[in-house]
Image 1 (cartoon, rainbow, N blue to C red):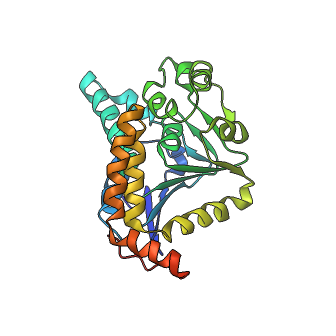
Image 2: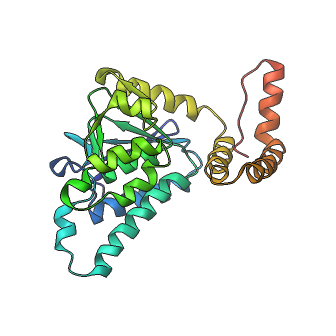
Image 3: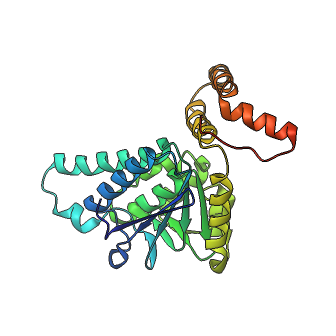
Length: 259
């Protein structure tokens, strides 16, 4: 992992990944996407990590793909490989066992907005903005559209995609792109509070629940109930479920075993 363009800090069960290409507005270069993929793989394999915070340094959260690198590509195969890599990275966020919280301090555009939409939770400073402006440069944000259209309504997604205009954090909250817009000086605390809250839960239970959420949401109603009934049956037989119920009935804090 390139430790200069992606910083990784782990403490108290919380992994903080920080995009660190401030001079390029954290544009997703090949190297940065590779570093993110590698970091996510490392985190996925570490049961001690309970939650991930995805943050960024500099004047922007993420400006999307690195257009200078994109324009340097000479073949269709090279271009296709970039979008395939990006899709792997976004999918890895969704499929990561641990929940991922986006901490958005500033503008998130195109694939940067896609990252926000792909995360499980998102908090933003009130001054942050979100946009899918590819239409303005002749490159429709078709891959960001996948994540965006799964978290906001169709009309709202199409407004962003067709106009290219940015929406403010309050609007993004109302549309469901982010969970909360907070004053900039409260962003760190808001994200930290949620990360600590999640980190205190059973890692096994959260992993089961996150996976089930994304699987059932693509099913029809009958399939979803049948599938989640199986998930809850398996979950009920786990040691952490038994411990949690016993602790609740005994009016004591649970002691999680992660299984």
